[in-house]
Length: 343
Ligand SMILES: [Fe+2]
Image (tube, rainbow, N blue to C red; front, side, top):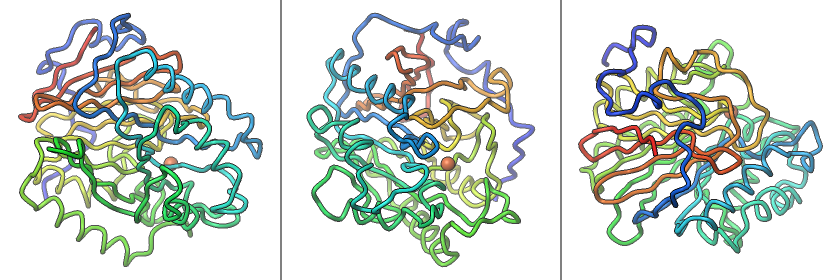
């Protein structure tokens, strides 16, 4: 297992081809009136979105604002959305009625409407989905997908899919990061998390999937908890110990996460993986714990969503806010060259 010393990691300031404005990480510096071009597959993602506003989900203004921005974004740009990615903490608070809860219609079907997003919505589980309120929402989320009547796609706690469907360019491994711990501290393990047998089973599956010869130029893992985060939850010791060596060994290109209620993009010297966090989908925002100038290239406390666009040549990832403004964007080639975009 390679040594993982989080504190001594250094942000690759010198090795990126990015502008001074992007380096300064100034919000809004890369807003552009230019239309965003579509790739061969375009996916929009959010995390931490099904906010209950202290028992009054009808007041979840942050979630509504982001959802409306996503709708405007695809209307205003020549984009065909191929999928939505929901990065966990899908439901805060109670989901009364489980699979029959009216919140499915009000906060999923209506806010991300099939009239605009008539595509699969790949979802993974976060800690709030496991959280008992008074019951865990995990079974309801799996059951809602299994009805086959919705775009909600969660065939199991972990699964694989690829895009585009024909001649795929990117493989996604969707995983369950709810290891028995709180933010990587096993001593604080809550009563709502994966069973230890499932943790072992998933790890074996993940390694088997990663060991396969790469069938696509790009490989992304998506899980709710970040391995590294500048937000208040911080770096996740257990995931770093268990999964980071696999990401390095098998050269995972992207790790997509949520959990902290902000938007981030972190790069570490010598690490083959770009860490991308999209947790601004609707839940209340919290202050960052690490200043974005210390590790980066980007972290911001803001509501928003993210856009992953893939071509044979590169993947472009963008963070956008509730007004549809691009806050941060970068491209990554199959060889791992990263370019921060400034327009
Ligand atoms: Fe979370």
